[in-house]
Image 1 (cartoon, rainbow, N blue to C red):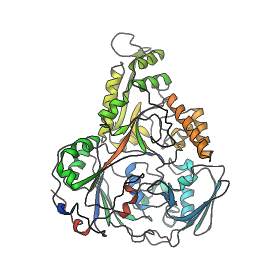
Image 2 (cartoon, rainbow, N blue to C red):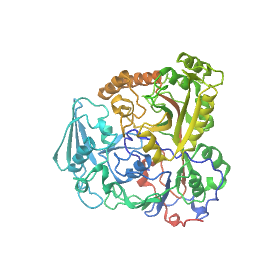
Image 3 (cartoon, rainbow, N blue to C red):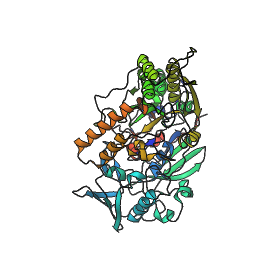
Image 4 (cartoon, helix red, strand yellow):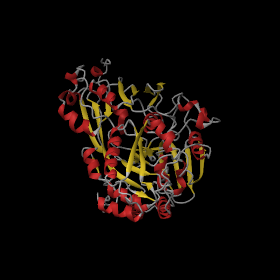
Length: 549
């Protein structure tokens, strides 16, 4: 999967795949060739599945991971990240930064065209910028571009961006913004346009067919400026049931799938037929799983209560029991091992006695001897909501429920279909607590998640977090151009967040992926495995696969 260059803090929709160990033996078509070196060839199809339908293929409107994954094949940005997570040109062939850091000048590649044959010019960049900063556009991604003082297009291949003040993530934001076709969209309501389901892009692929709730098929774009990808088609089957996905993978009717920890650590090692047909990959992604509180509701507006819940949750138990060891403990919203993560910051340990002490200080005691905590006659009872297709989050909720009930807190669990989860709970703020994940950008800027101004419908600060010290650090981190000073700012931000405990950091999971051996050209790198999908290929003898019963 071609990753969006700067993931811009997407809501992370992990598949949470089933621990199913059954399923059919992989179909034996051409298995004798799977380990045979074969030359690259064009043609064939890559067969994938997604756990939920895409919502909107305009990248800065759709906020779910399925939409972003598919739109990543269709559109380009001015810049992108390479396999080593370094910025390189995409639509732009070159760029310069002024000595004061306030002006970026991009030069577009010559003769770029949209999939319909129309030229892609600086006017399209101008249109996209004007659209994302338009107050009427319903997007959570506008804050990065509102700091631009002006954007000018001296000619069809030149874009000049001037900032009001120094903005450290500036270049990375132009790796995140997918450029849209002005000749199609100008004059339309971007929030309600048929383009969202029938897009025309400039990427390696274009939309071939989308049957809602069933499948989304892509075909290669012969007008892609970067040349032809080896694989002709990428086909997504929409399969909300993770167990069904794994059965189809086991029957070799899917070419790739994100694996659950059980499938990776137990099922694959125990089944030679799977190992014969699939390669598996493991790498630490840029995401984490968390328990988030509605900070506008009591008792979660009390820091002592949030800290008590953090102490009451056994994170090692979650890593061992949910992730089967395929995860790392975290205490900050950054990828462990990077410069942005403070090496000396540790998660709150599992300490039920400390949790009881904090709860008592906040007024929560078992005053009537029934085993449940209460305050002013009100029992400590709340609901955790998470998505029903994510088995890992469900199991995490169950373990958290058990630990908190041991303290006298009555926790209920509600499992909701993803679209309803977003529309009825996240976007409305109608929840007590949620288990979700964040997939983060490579730049440490997290203004749109944590800044107090980023609350409201469609915004990412849906937990209602407000901390003046954090606000100041987030603004300072954006303005600081010196790397060492910027690192120190984000370390202070991480410590302030850790002390305030607006969420419980549960763990950072490893990405676990299986890909059929007929797919070649995969080169694991710091960026994962999907950064060079256009270079993946299926040798000619392995292209003709029939769907197995």
